[in-house]
Each structure stands twice: as C-alpha cells, then as structure tokens.
Image (cartoon, rainbow, N blue to C red; front, side, top):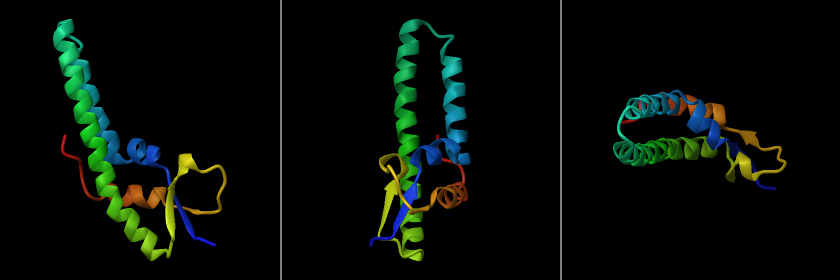
Length: 109
C-alpha cells in the first residue's frame, strides 16, 4: 500500500504568513485604487489580478521543494491535495510546509 501525504494548498495560500502578508499588500493597493475613476479602476484591478496570480505561483514554487523534501524524509509515495481526497489515513504535511515556506521570508510583491 502506498504511503500518502496530504497538503491543504488553500491553507498554505491563506494561512501562511507570507501568503497573508502578500494578500494584505494587494488589499491595500485595491483600497487605494477604489478612489480612481472607473476606467482606471478596471485597469488597476487587472494589474492586481496579475500580481495576485504571480504571488500565488511564487508561493507554490517555494513550497514544491519543501514538499519533496518532506515526502522523501517521511518515505511517502505520493502527496495529494486535501480537497481531492474523500477519506485518507495519510499524513497531513500542511503545518510543516507552512512553517518552512514562511521561513523563506516575504514574497516579492
């Protein structure tokens, strides 16, 4: 039987310090953009969405080697996304991944 690890990527993105800090920076920029005329606001929203996607990708890219390292250390055969699992006795790696990802410092906003 395969040894399974589980990762909650939503928690990684939303609960990690670096993810939450990046979200706050984007929220601040959006709040400032609200005062702009409608056409400028749409343009800024598009830019913020691109930044959001880039930040999410940075966070996932930072997490990948951490996940691989933990999987090897724990002799896991596979790591699955928590949302794709109905039931499992697999080991949840989320907290460990968040701790190590946060140790890498802030994302580049």
